[in-house]
Amino acid sequence: MKTLDVLEKLIAFDTDVQNSSLDAVHFVANYLSDHKANVSLISKNYGGQQDANRESLIASFGDIEKPGIIFSGHLDTTKIVEQEHLWERDPLKMTVVDGCVFGKGSTDMKGAISVLLSQVEKLKILAKKYPIHIVLTHDEEGVFTAINQLRDNNFYNLFPLKQKGCIVMEPSELHPVSAHRGNKRISVDIYGKAAHGSVPHMAVDAVYYTFQLYKKAKELAKTYFTEQDNRFEYPKTSLNISNFHAGMSDSMIPDKSHFDLSCRYVPNENIEKFFERFYSTIRIIEDEMKEKFPECSVIITERNHVLPLNTKPNSEILKLVQYSANNNNAKSVTYGSEAGYFQSMGIDTVICGPGNIMCAHKPNEFVLMSDLIKYERFLSNMISFNNSHKKEFSRND
Ligand SMILES: [Zn+2]
Image 1 (tube, rainbow, N blue to C red):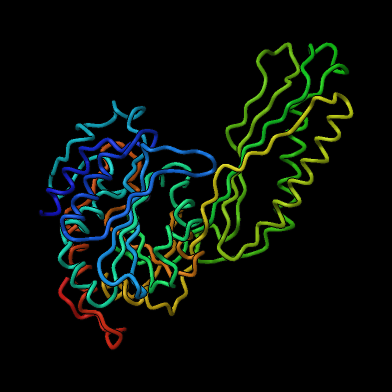
Image 2 (cartoon, rainbow, N blue to C red):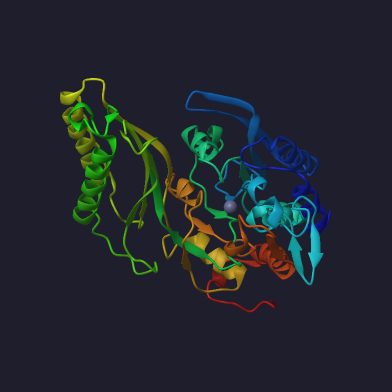
């Protein structure tokens, strides 16, 4: 099947991360099984949550007893619903106009997955050198439970040995990407005691304590975030609070307050000290509130944690990707990905995929046809790579 034939089919599956992407996963599983891959489907079962309607896929070609190369991707897409009116075409119907291939998920990242499937014969050739694994998750656009589950189970014992490397197929216009920030996100719910604004001595003001926490978080950030990484436009770790809401009526002192806190950190920052101190500040403030009214509480919910990517400059996978992409550089990106999870298992990881991230998650998402063709060549170049080719960029593309 040609890349566009596969992509048309993948786009037609509604794989909104809120819903099940099972049909798309099974289509890919059947396709790869027909091409003699060893395919495993893993149902979501993480943090006490079981969900048979969500599955990740691991498919392997070659002798899996040897270290191999992983292609990592995700089949889920962001929501269409709130943006439907902004689409000029049916988001689930692939349309090609002037070399642009439109459709939901075309750039992030069904385009890349379509190339892998259409070029499956190249994967089989590569698998004669080293095994090739394809890992596709189901909630990269959500809270990353799939990649956490796979990692915590050592990819269901498929990767007990150290792999040669991993290529995460997020959109990078085929630039090799060696760095992105981590992002740890928490929610904080503050429960005080409501009272009429005229009797503040009877209230435990949730907003007052929220502002105390906000101030403290900013102070701690100044103390504990010390790294500077000039690969990023803003070279330091940043902290922001969002989704703040409190209060129901202007006559009442609010008993409840909520905010989300996001810590986007540069790869070498140790953020644990910050969170340790911030959580102990929360406990001190909670005690202060309880002294006024014992039922007060502050609840912390750790929402998700995208691990940072920081590829070693001399890693074999980076050289392979640079050679195959015909690009001797490595850049950083502003988005997060599952790449850090592979790296945290000791697997050198690089991001490289077709499409521009600026198109992702947006109405009228598209991938350039030329990027898909380049990614097909990328796989051919992988076949021709060997270590003596390290600095040689002589192919026609
Ligand atoms: Zn993506």
